[in-house]
Length: 377
Image (cartoon, rainbow, N blue to C red; front, side, top):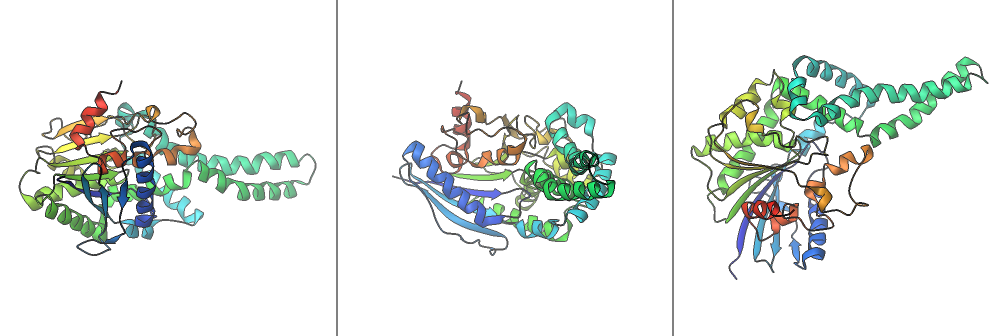
């Protein structure tokens, strides 16, 4: 059987866990795919990419029954994320406060709310909860104990209870991660990528450009979460390197897309230029974002944030996770919002043409997968 050869570039979100976590996640989901299909998807060991392990790490994926061979390349920027990952709660609170002042000044919240109201809530609730939850956890016990104990004793007990419990509760509500996310992207919008990230994006673009005309039946550029923001900047650089349209077998896939976090900042002039530069470029873009995912912008075409017209062939899709998970396994509620944002990279209880392993290791092209998905009632 002649193998279908696929090249996959994957760019993840604002997550310091890095390549080891995502390689293991891919292996676990490949095993789930095998249980549902009987197709044995083998995932090879990690190896350094052509430009060194700092830029990318590769592994082979083989689906022998389907005749698919995949060269999977994980584009790395978790080292840069680790440098700005604020761990101490006090500096995080101070920097988040400054960041939210910037968001209040420059974010087009009215336009964002018209596009999708869910992400507006996701952006705004962390600072509110970060203040209210520690305050209530200290105040309520202190007031109750004040009926029995001296005020200074009850106040100390209330503060101790708040210190003990508020961190866990805030973490369960994903507040620290969202504060870090909004702090980082506030600086990114205002100041641009900076020297290190700018150089890394150039290296990513060079890697993609080098493979587009290779011996591949399909080239996928898959971006997830905050990676969808950087993906647009990378794509502009790819076009600049090629000075030509992308080949027909190339496709960009955005999962859990969050481009408006930067695209709707009035001061993000550098990023507006990147988006505007893509308006007249011909390429294939498939957006897979879930309406219940409060961290994603479902049915918001990033190419229309700064331009009314665009030349790309675009599909905007919901993954419809509820159809592919048993109710007990489907993520829901505030406590699972973070995990739900990673369901794009998982295989459900029922196979979807758009689940991550089906797209990257299955026998269908992205166009065929989209067509098959649209037939599902």
